[in-house]
Length: 220
Image (cartoon, rainbow, N blue to C red):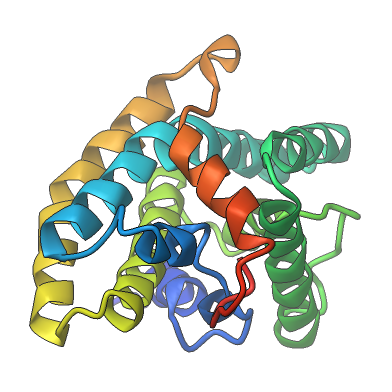
């Protein structure tokens, strides 16, 4: 039986054990908990699901698809263009800093494990993720599914710590998110360039407030 390493490669990239510092960032969820917008399992699912629909699925994932395509073609001009668009769409200093931090950390790892994978000068986490997936011939849809799962898992783990929720509640949320993630990936793959957008106002408010939050565990 032929060995196809793409599944293991994408599991490696999506693993919470990958040392890119994702656990440092809540993407505004810490402030949402402090403000009591998120206070139990139901509201945590509503918050994370809302971000999946209004941010991940309409901004990150369609841009990731274009970064993957540009990486397959080694079109560095397109990579830098979409990378810049994604960073510019982050509405707060914290969200931009998070993206750059995780992107830089992933690039550092890739330089160690795949020295033949040439960097492009991009800044975002999505650009580095797409570059790695294209290099290892991971299919586009699998790339988006893995990215969406990694994002969701980090958000749920953050909610488990902050609300706090039990581990069983966290697993129920992840279970409920799976069909939604499939939907947002399918939608992202059908979006045109002019349809790419961001519509998660409360995340922007929460992230901006978090910059001055008195006590906090997370960097965003």
